[in-house]
Amino acid sequence: MRAIGETDRGGGVEFRQLRTFRVVARTLNLTRAAAELHYAQSSVTEQIQALEADLEAPLFERGGRRLRLTAAGQRLVSYADQLLSLAEEARAAVREDAEEPSGDLAVGALETLCVHRLPGVLSSYRARWPRVHVSVREANRGELYGAVRRGDLDVSLTFGEPPADEALGAATVDTERLIVVTPPGHALATASMLTPGELAGEPFVATQVGCGFREMLDRSGLGSSVVAELGSMAALCGCVAAGMGLALLPESAVREQHARGVVAAVPLKDAAAPVTLTWLRRRESRPAVAAFLAAAGAA
View 1: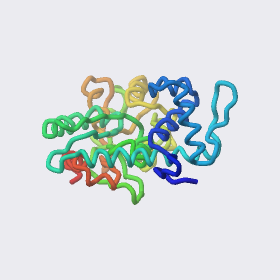
View 2 (view 1 turned 120 degrees about the vertical axis):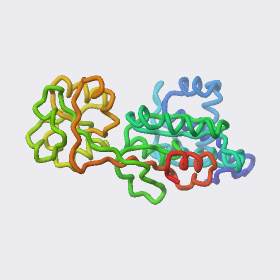
View 3 (view 1 turned 180 degrees about the vertical axis):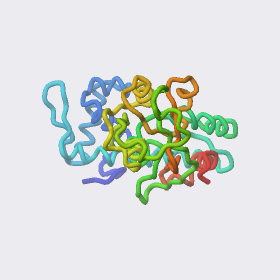
View 4 (view 1 turned 135 degrees about the vertical axis):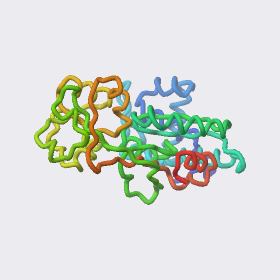
């Protein structure tokens, strides 16, 4: 098997082929891949065939209109992601001026942090470093950490403790009080503070297992009282307002609904959620990333 970039008789795996392979592996359809890449379908086919020849292994099983990855193709997907990510990092590092950050910066955050915290950070960052093109992705915590590990995101902003991973850097940039969200007329709505003991037996609505918000509820000893799982803060607050149950959320997640009187909000005693910034350590030296870490309070 020849190495990436090896030129035996003009061959060798090319980054263009890997980019094409990655799109075909995602779509499993040559026509859709060609349209997405703006190539002729014959060009996509030729690139895949050349890649298979260079790697000396079939990457797809062909049956009718639908493709299927072989075991070798499945293994190549993660390597292609890593190689292309490193190529983009190298390109950005070479182009960036050490004195003035430039290039692309991919930032991810939870829904609540995208709405309430990230805009201020991004506004000040862009005002100072206008040559950086910032893109933002909203996702759940597991998806964000996975995207940072793969190099799809430079940094992510989440609630909760970061994963134990030597490849990742992390910093707690703030904390938020945890709030018990109740319907306005609930018996607990007028309390100044609540304890987990006072909430025993109360039904709760929560996000799915694995989400940072759900972990906060579980750590408070209230996870066994969950009667429904929902995917967004708006849905959670809507179900609370309708009387389906209570919720436990960071203060910023419920501030607007509380101000409008849709729900009541009572702090949970001695309970807070860390706001965590996570990044890929190998990208710390990129000026655009380092500048964002400083702007977000991680440096």
